[in-house]
Length: 388
Ligand code: HEC
Image 1 (cartoon, helix red, strand yellow):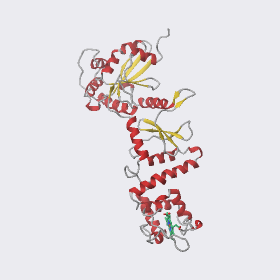
Image 2: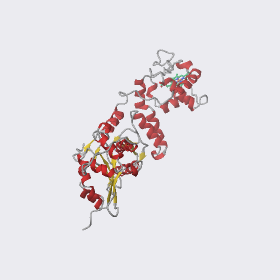
Image 3: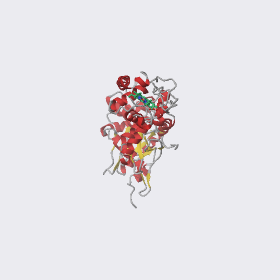
Image 4: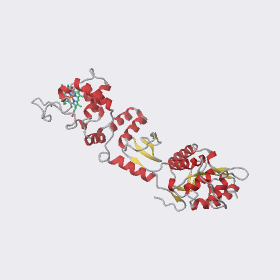
């Protein structure tokens, strides 16, 4: 990981954690938490009735099977009805295969299982499957899920939806692969066929259409040189920033004509924020307006928290910021007012934006400069350096 030497780091959140989350979800589902089942308890109840009426006579009322030696064929090579409660073979079959067996039966294939396509509809078929799967242990279910569960079903759907445009199917597949707590955005197609971009937490990951392979990294367009992932992140940041009203920022207006604006997440207790603050006059002279957002990097327990609140409660916030950052003498008032709520909101927003330390400087195009940069360099980054 990159070492940030020019900022004050907060608590580590972000990519690393997501990577761990993903690798856990993508490799060890069966060994991890019990997988969430695809069906509801209502479906089990509905399926119980269906099963008693149509299936129990051969497979047993609790899908336990009625013939002990279900693995031995008779002299005609036919097998008795097997248990469907997870003790036999049924978990080898993907959902569409189970549905097909129930609808069409196996007679055509030389078996004895009758087809039910004329007797029970699709919903009752699924309910019957839900019923006998409700007897499966978590272990059996997880094995099924991993090998042939809804993941495979979704795959079929994607193939049907020519070109794999069925993003709902990709979502379903991912939800099946990933641990429950994962915050996933909707999958989007990328310029690379069959590769989807998904937002997981604050990070973007790329997934193969079958949800099996994940790429963690940035996607570059080598013809234009553009970092497509970063462009997305920049857009996300600007979108998030819109949720924080300008009136809640501490603003240092450009001198004369305003040429650019910087939004800077700051913590009064951070030495690099103070260093940058001392150069704010230089920025203002160059036509840059600085708008501060509060980011108490230690959260509510950090030393900056109380001071930031005091700044936000002050009648003249800019003057209070100067005092808090040591560029002016004076005393801070108290931080007990409604406006202090902005400090908590700033902290939340910073986390959503993916900020881990201060100062964090957002450029007008959404680029993020993590850590201190001298004013001169910032002015260059903004394209405002005076042409020679
Ligand atoms: C007349 C007896 C009979 C009835 C009724 C019956 N089945 Fe079957 N089923 C079988 C037999 C026999 C097999 C074994 C495969 C074969 O030879 O067809 C089987 C196999 C299956 C399988 C595949 C199991 C595996 O391990 O491969 C499923 C799933 C299944 N049945 C579900 C049902 C459901 C659900 C119903 C009710 C809607 C039902 N069956 C009703 C006789 C029956």
